[in-house]
Amino acid sequence: MTEWEWEASAASQLLDVQIYSASGEPVGKVDDLEFSTTERNEAPVLTAFLCGPTAFGPRIGGLLGLGVWAAARRLSPTGASPVRIPLSEVKRINRREIRLRESAQVLGIHRGTEWTREHVIRPLSGGSR
Image (cartoon, helix red, strand yellow):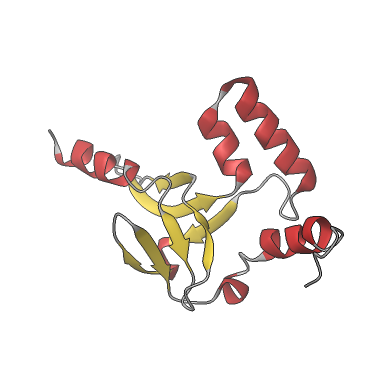
């Protein structure tokens, strides 16, 4: 196994790992990975984690994935863009969790949670408690 294949295999194990803010608040799971390449055609480098249904839908694929992506695109406050967490914001990574350096509010990745709380949970009977 080449070094690039080993790195790609290790990166794929990050999918579905829970992400926590600096305060310990769960902010999502890794739904996709973003890689960048250099001009010298070197191996791709992991640059960010992508979260949310607009990242998860294409990963599922098929009609179900398209449905998840389309619904999320219409309902999400971020539109068609998944939540992007650059590796520079990551404090610690292991197989069970990813810890961020900042809070979800500082990073701007709390919008989906707040939107869901405001538009889905609060209108329910007893949802404001």
